[in-house]
Length: 474
Image (cartoon, rainbow, N blue to C red; front, side, top):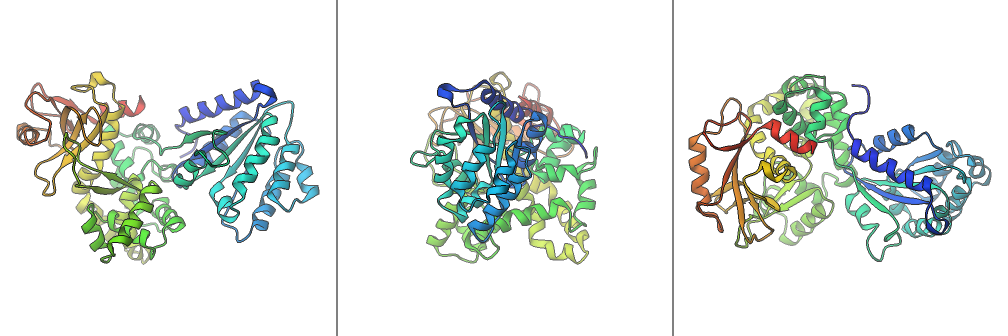
């Protein structure tokens, strides 16, 4: 699939920042800095490349890697700068700086003064890891030199926690940079790229996670099973290798965090079951691993939403693509590599309906958070779910005024994501029964249904896949 699809909002924000650079700033400081973060392989680098190409301004694009020494990083940076389109690129080529302070100071001298330019430092966390002083050096040179030039400095990173912390109080770059989070492509973007019906677009989103590399190899108009038939049999497909590379970069298979992540990816959601699936880790070790995974935004933590506090904590893989990869692909790479991808495909087909019914829930809740209030039975500041230790009752959707402990329940809902089976009176009866056992809810709390196949209940508020796509477009 050719072309660049989506990211209109992000491109507009980048263009706006470049326009501010061009207009200049107060006290002769037109330079701006941007900290861009997003999950691995979500398309951050491709987005910035597209932005730079469209802007058609002098630029330097440097991608760091896990080099063994600062000298190796510097050599690669100088090489990239020397071959860039900056008007003074030859300065770095001639001087061959040996420190980051010298290299960044020379970079400032290489920038144009009569028009805007862009400098991109991709995978910046690698630079900080190899040289803890890099962050302070960049801040010093930005304050003294770069901010005085009409340049947009874009620092990109996949370590979400590190990139977010760079702008924290007490860190060198505090209040010096604008932050931008690059999410995966949305289900609405997936539909636009693949030209699929709304329900099939959500299926494609659950498999791809909205990762551009996977969607680029997805045939247009192809439903999920047609795509998987080929992709699962190809050991080099983006569907297979993206997960392996992303996890290997941060969580080696035998690390405690890696073991815990794989246990959660296998479907375990509670502390005790995760511990057992990870090899009966000691409680302190499991707690540390979970804390790391949550800090890195790899795992999400949720508690039941009601007017009473609860300790029934659940853990889930945050990224939709990794949910699929850890469930079906990661544990079976060896059979795919020996040419038995058919076994993997059969396993996916057999478990697809039940797996999809569970993992669609956070996607639906996110859509409800985006929907205008007039599409819902009542206004709700937060959207969550409710469950007990025995899952009786269990409510897919709870809208409330606040979290983690609600002051007032606004509405409840049920998600039925099945083929050719609409939400019916039996489903409504079960929802109303569970509503009666939800702390803070009574018969006056309205109910809604989210159904892949519509509803057979008259007068019921029902949202379809088309409605959810509208929410993502908004």
